[in-house]
Image (cartoon, rainbow, N blue to C red; front, side):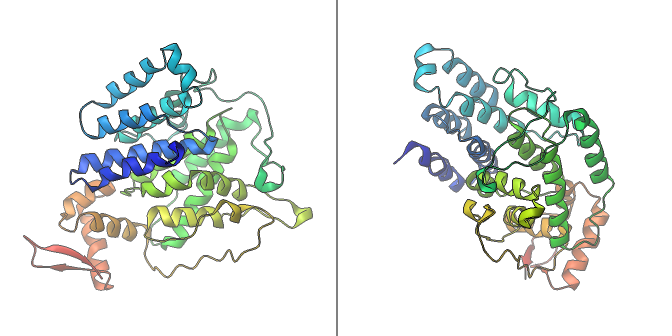
Length: 348
């Protein structure tokens, strides 16, 4: 089997384990390694073996980082795995960040994530770019997205994040919420605050942000579709009036539907090309709100979970969660079986 295609299969076997911690470790590793594909980077066999050691509990994440750093200090290894060095180092750092519960929803957090991911790899790690640029995109027939001027980067980021902080998802349908999340994500990406590693940094920031809603992110979507994620961001920020092409978040919305619910849209890179003709309509029959979708996802992973635990995962009061879940029962979305004490939640 080709080494570039085998890493996800090697790690996926650990999803069969019962331990929650092991499962969460696998999810973080799969997303971390899969996101390197955004820049065409592939992990080494040594990184995969190190990840397995960490998943099995034989080493902690700091020891995993140390192993990778020491591995690339040896000259022969640097020559043999030169194409994998960045992928390996950024993957283990990303797995560490994704395993942490701490998160601050501000510009400094975004900058800090970039610094931690790319320190010693890019000299500009953790620094806002100080020049303007363009980037040819194959899906745009070598045209470019117009990125924010370097002179307005910090102000643009602060504005977008402040607007999101003040935005209420209350009573919005899942479709409306995902449209908004897609636009917010594409806005942050379009500012392009960093010279290199912008998409990977944006992805980690958004994953951490969505987890504050209580979402347990579907690792498969990022692990297997990270290049599609970037192409979807490109299409969400590209317009060409002469060719009758406009900014289109529908590709990104499909990605987020798959990421946050049990939707199964086909995410093919060729679909994002400006010359590809297809039916872009999103068919969504779910009448959930974002909060209801979070609760459904949580119940799917643990049908015996208590409402107190759900409230903690969602960063909401127990009173609010009880109100939402009572309303969900009235709507016929969920029900309680076998009583309060030893009962389970059932998704209808």
